[in-house]
Length: 369
Image (tube, rainbow, N blue to C red):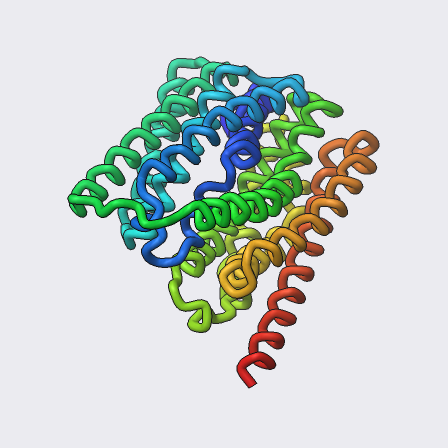
């Protein structure tokens, strides 16, 4: 928040290219690993997992480069390197969560965030307010966090030696690829819904508006942290029938945080004139943030109960709505159009996910009867 809006726009452009690159090119390996049944890793063997990861890293770097070109802002090395770091970290985090290392994984996230803030503070105190330099610090932290967590997961895996030989055959590996494809289509659609608006703001409005809008998006995402944790715990649950509806409690936890985020953006606007419109973006994003918080938990439950095809169908419907709104509103209204379109898209996502989850539950009850 101490950067001028245009410099923060460059930092935000690198971040969005990396995060979208990791999502689009990463085969959704993190969600895929979390959603596999117990014993899957042993039956498939380490080489299968490492092979999927290796291919995903190449596609991740390519996707990040293409997104940087579309945005017209940012650094190719930073975007590509950070995207690969995020892919490795997410895969290692998923394996750690499967091993019930919740505290360690989330502690690593927290430590990485703290180190990043310290790095930013060091640059600020030295008067170096260059968005490109801050992006390099962000890159270094992502790569370091991925390396530390990756080594930890390899260490935990080493405790279970000797590792039994893989027992899966070609049909099982083919089923894995089909499941990855179905899941990945849905995750790609979700990421386009969440982040395409920032790429288009960069393209049509420039670095300054992107810096302000991306700050509002980041502030409101704090409110979704509880939903993310709850979703990952749902995905790690081995008994689908034991999954409860946590949508209401997640929204109750998200609302005060989201409201405080909007207030904080308003205060920041008084202190830094570059960001005087940030609170308006935050206010426009507030309804969608609450809907998205509930939708993420419902989506995790839907994935566990009905499989990848159900969540993919919802994601594709949401993406079709969001992309149309983005291309209609952002070239005309810039970041204001992006905030409004995002909120509407998030509402559609939550509504369709809840609808599909209820339909799936009714079908399950009918089959049991």
